[in-house]
Length: 151
Length: 95
Image (spheres, rainbow over the protein chains, first blue to last red):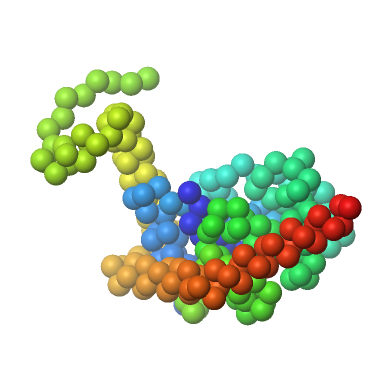
């Protein structure tokens, strides 16, 4: 069961370990993975975007361990169409899924967040994001939205 | 590979297990979930974070608040409308 989906900014802040938000995200990671078997979803596109902001060996170690140990759904990378990285957590040949993501991307104007929304809808999961206002404008609270500062 | 174990549990746990068709599968799933939770905490700590009880309370409260906002009748209705509108748009586009 995916309880919480992280966007790239959340993953990057966790790996960088250099802000108050980093601590809050660590607390969420520990708490969201609970004894009932809940876990955290990391869209491949968010992992890719987070990677771009890392610089130190310790950052990359944290990133690798997150990517390897926490991604609890099968992932498949889709081709990019010039608007960003294409990646989802479901089968790449599922046309309906691609159409859904295309519409979310169109609404949000953001390839990554469009896929984060898709994950959240698919798993009825909450979202941890640096852009809560953008999501709320178009989707309301969905299944729960948290900002990196805890609001 | 499996092993057969004989275990002793308190009455309340035994009563809970009595309600399961397959107590072994239930225990296995609970223990595995616990292991995953322990692994998550260990990993976070290995990355230099110290997650205190206060921090867990803070995180739990944030998750609960977000869930409450999401479950409000207004939001449930809005969510359904948004996703329904997307479905209609896809059907329209596909003719």
